[in-house]
Length: 427
Image 1 (cartoon, helix red, strand yellow):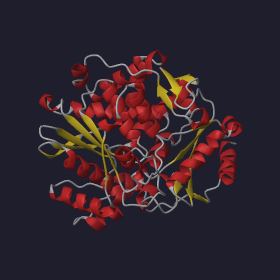
Image 2 (cartoon, helix red, strand yellow):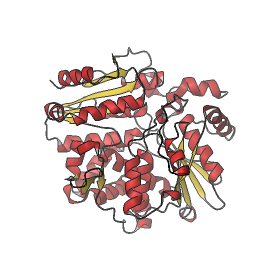
Image 3 (cartoon, rainbow, N blue to C red):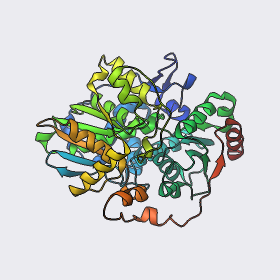
Image 4 (tube, helix red, strand yellow):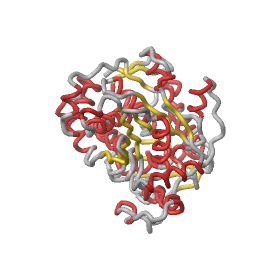
């Protein structure tokens, strides 16, 4: 698989190099040189999840890994289901929270861990990533205990849920967590600053497990195929996906799935009031506002890192961004959506509810809608319990960690203490 740096197209790398580098020159994202369609989509959709996902990823990665190697990696990474649940006649939820950290990030993080174990060949690696909630837990658990790999996770202090924090800030061992006294965008900026320090990158073997890493992004392509595969044959030609969007990696993965031939009629980008992209799609002006804290905190992102990949995909395929549906909800509207879903018999946390509301408001006759549920409602228990009539029960993954002490360090949004930490951790 050949990939190029969107900002510096002369930088071209293999899949293994892209996974290990993470971010390209000038903070550029890597993008596939070509996205060729898969053959026999109907036959592919009739296969089981692991077989189908292995075929998709081997098609994307190419000759760098054998099909047998990819299959082993997929089997180890995707050890849990991604079921769809019907909410109404033409609307279904794609539940991506059945993995070990109860969020969609498990798919990408666990596949990336498989890739790095294979590609690093025992050399020391330091993973540096920023999280607005779910990425940190997924990455920490995916790499927990892996020899020669250290993980440092930055998150905005006081701006993720208590249960999200407990899930990954209580591990220890090769996992270091840092609460930054700012917002997610500041955490993300610190990660990029670290990658700009070439000497530091070399010294600590720096890599990123954010959705900027191509291995995570490609893993997410697979569950779009899994969703369509679970539909009746007659419903597969008019599918509309509504995607709760913060850093926009999930939507990017869906668009790649569509490029490979998955029959998707259109996508809807659903955000909260951190609505840089919906406003851009409406008026063509890229004007990020200061990030605002909301009930849907994993989407509290004003400058989404993956958006350049979406623009690149549309550019190279001569498509128009006007194809994308979009919309944003306030916290009050999010609460109303959660209650409306509950009355239909489905319990959702804020992110999924936003995607559902945008889907039902834009779905047309004869279309089949699927909205992505990216986290288990219990990960946002304090929010969900304050809105819905019945408390959410804690699944075992959370119940086992609720009373453990936090092991986080607390830093200002400054690069110097982060650099010092990275050198100490890697040493």
